[in-house]
Length: 290
Ligand SMILES: C[S@@+](CC[C@H](N)C(=O)[O-])C[C@H]1O[C@@H](n2cnc3c(N)ncnc32)[C@H](O)[C@@H]1O
Image (cartoon, rainbow, N blue to C red):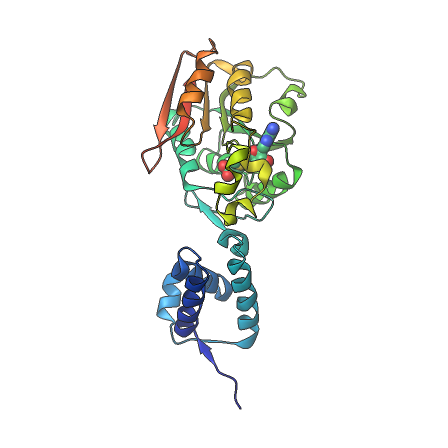
């Protein structure tokens, strides 16, 4: 008996129903993104090719992708892709998947200092999205970015090089500001930037399985109160900033009050403000030494 030939539309419908049965959020979207990735077509192109047959070798690969998605592997790790600031980035299990909220950090910096050349120090660069999107938008800026995780820096280098920014971004390995202390120079920066880990250890159980079973825990968790890295950033950044320098970092949506308390302990900052995300929650903190 001849084996069945699958076409794009029925494969999408079958996969959507299967994802629904397994409680995968956004089942149709996930089916389209995975099939589009496999067939190297955009979602729009899939719609224009609903009748296109999908052959056995592709079906075999697709079946494996479906199994992994049912096991809650995040879509971005299956496609090795995430868009950020309208740029394409490579991602895999070595790095946190970039979140749209983090774009507020990049947009705030770009808006604040549109015309003057800036020096940037990023702590915890992960996939390198913040450093790379700043460098793409501002080729004359000088950027140093660090991470405690060597594997993450390997991904950051892939992204930096893919966007032709290798001349403009230096990656350094180490804990917080340690790699900067080890540099010979006593240079000070216009900006210290970070999207640090900020999840409380006890919140582990409340995270979705896509997050807690797959994303690197070093990128998520920051001690019992979720503030261990933020506390160090607020305390140490003034030592690396120019007199008019600024610290900008992302926070969790329940961290406004504890972060205010940390700033009140630090006389170096003259002002700070919270910037809200798309859901209207405090998400980014911008603090200034002048
Ligand atoms: C939330 S992820 C952010 C990654 C990326 N900047 C982004 O926005 O998608 C935090 C990053 O900080 C790094 N990190 C965690 N603890 C660190 C530390 N003590 N010093 C430097 N980097 C650290 C992690 O390895 C991870 O790559």
